[in-house]
Length: 94
Image (tube, rainbow, N blue to C red; front, side, top):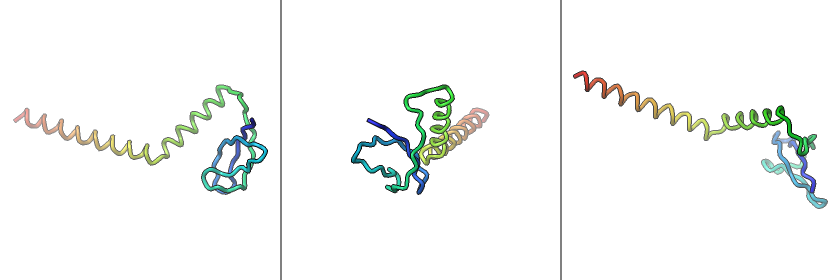
């Protein structure tokens, strides 16, 4: 069964899709059908391809709202504990 890689010309989303004879591919993000079929690395793996995939996944993760929220929460957590630590140190000096 052929799996093809596409890029939506409308929103830029890249995705893979199993395409059967009766299947009309559409973008999973915007449902657009103006797609460009990409050259696929069909079951070919190399260290360069793996590295590129990892970098792309990390970049997407860094840009996600969830990642940013976690970083903000971590900074707030550290600030809270630093404040508590300073208060304990002041109390022990008195």
